[in-house]
Length: 467
Image (cartoon, rainbow, N blue to C red; front, side, top):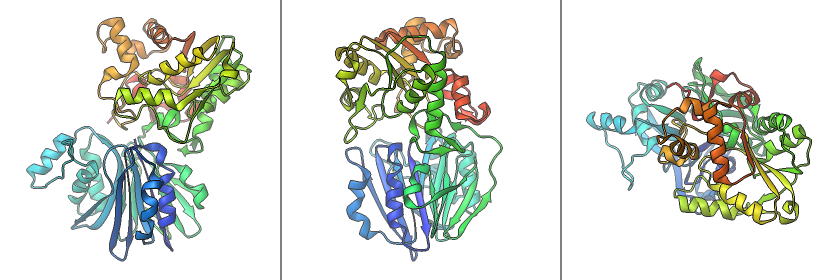
């Protein structure tokens, strides 16, 4: 997915920028970059972080950065920031985006006489593409509106200019942008967890399609928010850090509520519940309350070195990460009936390998509870998985096995409790090798988030979306 951070102060912003970007590290694993502005000069650095952490890549370069304003990004896609000089002036841009019509837009720009840099993989940089669309406007607002009109997918961005930081949220608000107020200026971030330790308090959630100019003295609206919102529900399910909030709804509280509701209605007998770290812990604590059974750490994540298991690019590497990062606790598992709560099942890689270890370490029964519904449709808007095809989803492989066609009866398979749904869940249970498997319903998920259904993107669960 990706996450960005910006700071603009009455004094140097470099330290805040460095740590603020770092607090977005859980949002991506591939590229990172920072840029500062000082006396008409941009200072920029970009690094590959696939095999290292953000701080280790940028720490030694900090003395080279200077200025009272800056932006940075953790990206799962392109090398960013991009620095542009056009009739609007000089600006730097970072973006969290997925452009589904990128090839068509590239050709349109080439036909109009523009040029684009190209990566070794044959793809162009999405932020560069957006910068060209912005430069077609008579001002920044018209340019950003041009991006909104022409891209299919989603796009949120920060622009660093001589006047301040321009923050523009995706036209349907699929990814968040929050503004924080500090003693000597303001910050803007994808994740609110970047604010507290840097002395900022969340002051404003930028609305869908809204454009805001942020200075050290405050912020002003350049474009009003749209009336329609489709904020990604998977932010609460998986990506968001537990202390973060979007639209005023806390991530960990949402996960706790999902577990609480499932625990109250679950009729299995178990000795304890455990969360599959880290995103399953909040749900498990709620489940323990609802089910009235103890919470125990039956499996523990080795945090220092292992990344998320669905973000590595190859299946073999995903399987290695899934196996190596979680360590079962034999003394707690031995002879016990255990419920394990997890955020979701995407490919089934992690659960399949972990379940085998749980039984090997002595678990008598293993019951899996998932905080969200089955993922039936690949994400079209936020790149939250690295899937190259529908068949990488365990649901689609299962549907293909049951129907001979992975696209048959999808609506029925997405309907909680339907005969198709029950057959699919039972088949997934067999593949994973557990005693029982249950998913939360879409209704429970939406209720736990606390926003109207029409304001939340649930496309990956039920195929509903609009562009």
